Length: 446
Image 1: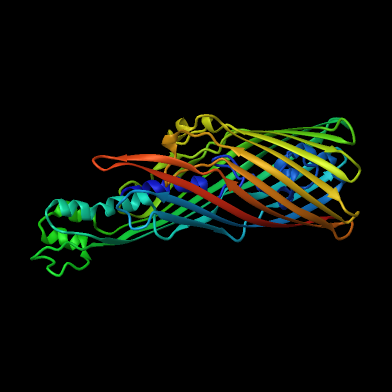
Image 2: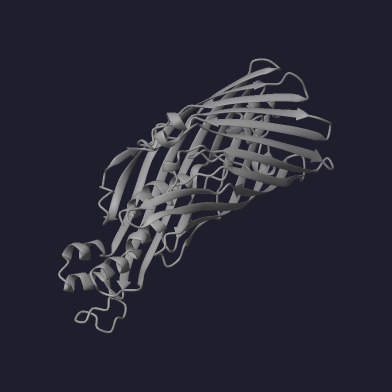
């Protein structure tokens, strides 16, 4: 039952990472939703995706506020034979996920600011817990039957809710060295916070003991073991709870390069250095004993190398390409990085077409490749390769005001892990996931 604490330490590495590495959120604008390839951006979301590309926008002030609404369902199916229910569902709901951008551009210089949830961002709610919580409890009838006391059923109340949010405050300076060549330098200040609440309560079963429980009805497991003179077992089935907050800050240096060799072609390159991030426990309650108050641990955000290309195929048609490499293996995750076989990468393609001067439509595709060891995958920490499909539109209301809308669907490749239990057997556990998300953005130019 100490897996409760292990879950809280690891589950939020995957909440809600719509398009990203194991840590980073790349979904930072509504324009991204409708194209999925933004590394050569020359619009306001270049603050995040391609800071050097901001030298290509018009002089003046530009601001944009975007919001995303994300729903994700995580499904774990465990075939362990003694469980009451093999299927466990975790719901991630994020009604507000609000990136903001501001740029001032004058001649060759652009100064910019960005704010957004660069990792985490949602609440994961597992209303019935996870298999690793319940499997030890499901063994109780087998255990007590071994004592010669007929027992056929168990019940318990298990729940976990975790929230993770890593806000980023980004500042960039971009300069056009020539009409073709531009540079950018900046940094992002990360403010990270995880909060966890979980409990295992009311463990009951039905031992037909002639003195303690002659009716054979459901009774408290802790009470039974106490009356039976088994204090060690009684202690293991007591109610347990965790209430913990983890917080810390980090600093990410950022470098960018933009190449515009012609009016039709733009190339963006960005490198984000590894973010050293140390989190500290503030523990209100921890019956597991695994979250000592004041304990510090590393939870870095990996370095990222991004490359993007935008090409005007026709006057009304533009094609986009993006590639990101996430250096997960070089991050410090208290040893978990050793279970990453190779660095995560993603490839994205998008296209947009002008229906009129005021209205365009777009679509995109993104493949994210995850390669972690089998030992990494469990109900409390699993990563899945995915394919993302996006689409949307832009409405130019006037010369100063734009409206972007986008929607995405993420299809994940199921994975399984086999777990062996002594004297019982080996049983597979399957991990599945789906994500739907919608984004709306408003941009204004002064």
